[in-house]
Image (cartoon, rainbow, N blue to C red; front, side, top):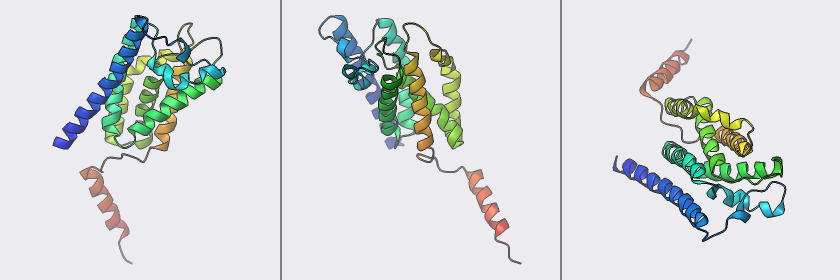
Length: 208
């Protein structure tokens, strides 16, 4: 139990550390201490490639950053605790894959910034994992995410000034990696499942 609590505590520290980085970067940008204009994801432009890595850490306004803060806090904490052995791989894949898809496929008439693509990717992973794994824990988490953040689907609707492509490709990346890792981090079977397995064994173990 102590290890579980420490693991949860470490995950919370990690998540708050990430959010602190987002806010520090924004405040440094806001007060003119650093210039992040060259670090957005600019599709089809070589100079925009570095935005695949750096653009999630950049936000255009307080409202933009505030709207992303709570979802990343909640969803990343759930990811780290529910799928501990694969969470880092999932996060890195969503980060790189969603950013790359935006760079390759989105129009080149705008620069994409913000961590919302990763947020959509984590949400997509958590919901899809419930569908692919079908165990109680994954299904419960999927239902929680769907009920709490179901309104995020409006983020797929094209809207001027909103990086809906990041949302879409983030979610797609999350679903893809959920399928890849569908057999990882599986919980132990419940008692009734063990009893069912034993009954099946006895049934087929009859001799004639």
